Length: 252
Ligand code: BV8
Image (cartoon, rainbow, N blue to C red):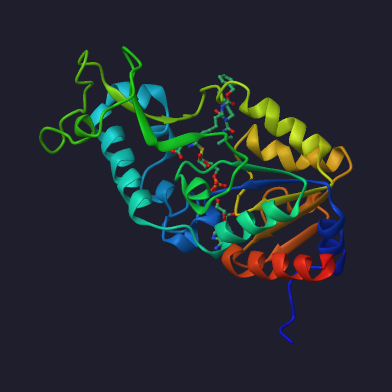
C-alpha cells in the first residue's frame, strides 16, 4: 500500500467536517501546464510584478501589459483542469458547506465544475474598457497589429483584464465572504500558494485563529508553513485525489 503523505487526523477531520474552506494558488494549476509566478521559470522570473501587474505599469505601457495578459489568457484557454481541480469538485460534493477561495485568474476551477468559487484576484478571461467599463468583445481582444494597444470598439478606451492588480481593492464582498468562510471552517486547506500576497495569504491564519484544523499542500514549505497544523509535501494533482478517496472510504 503506497504511503500517503497526509495524516489520519486530517482524513477524519475532513470526514466529520460540516464546513470546509480551501485557498488555492498558482501551484494547483502548475500540472495543467500554467506557469506559476514565483517558481524558477515562473511568470515573475522574466518580469517583476511591479512592471506588469499594476495600474501605472499598464498606463505607462499598455501594449506590454495587454500583450502579457493576452498571452496568459490564451494559455489558460488552451489548458485543462487537472486531477487536483477535479478532486476539489469531488470534495465539494461530500461537504455540507464548502467554499473554494482562489487567487488564480485562469478560470480552471469554474471549468472543472466547482460551484462555490470566490475569485479574489479576478478572472483573466474577462476584459473591460477602462473608460466606459463595457465588457470587451472577442474581436476587440485581437490587436489590430502586433504591439498595438487593444481598444474598446464602442468608445476607444484602453481594454484591461478583469484581474486585481497590486494596490487595487479586491472584488466587492469577495474578501468578506472568504473571511467568514475561514472563520467558520472546521478544516481549512491551503493548496499551491507561496502565501506571500495579502489579504489572501491571511485566510489560513484566520482559520487557524478561529479553531480550524489547517493543512497546507505544496511541493515546498510556504511562508505560512510554521503556522499550520499539517504540511503535506507533494503535488496537488497527486495528493488531492488520494486525500478525497481516503475521506470517501471513511465516510461510507
Ligand atoms: C490590496 C494579478 C488593499 C493578477 C496579483 C502597498 C500598497 C498596496 C498594497 C500593498 C502594498 N504593500 C503590500 C501590499 C499588499 C499587496 C501584497 O500583498 N503585496 C505582496 C507582494 C507583499 N496586496 C495587494 O496589493 C492586494 N490589494 O491589498 O488592496 C489596498 C489597496 C490600496 C492601498 C492599500 C491597500 C492585491 C493583491 C493581488 C495582486 N495581484 N496578480 C494576475 O496577474 O494573476 S498577485 C499574484 O500572486 C497572483 O494573483 C497570484 O494569485 C498571487 C499569489 O501567488 P501564488 O498563487 O501563491 O503563486 P506563486 O507562484 O507565488 O506560488 C506557487 C506555489 O505553488 C509555490 O509555493 C510552489 O511551491 C507551489 N507549487 C508549485 N507546483 C505545485 C505547487 N503546489 C502544489 N502542487 C504543485 N504541482
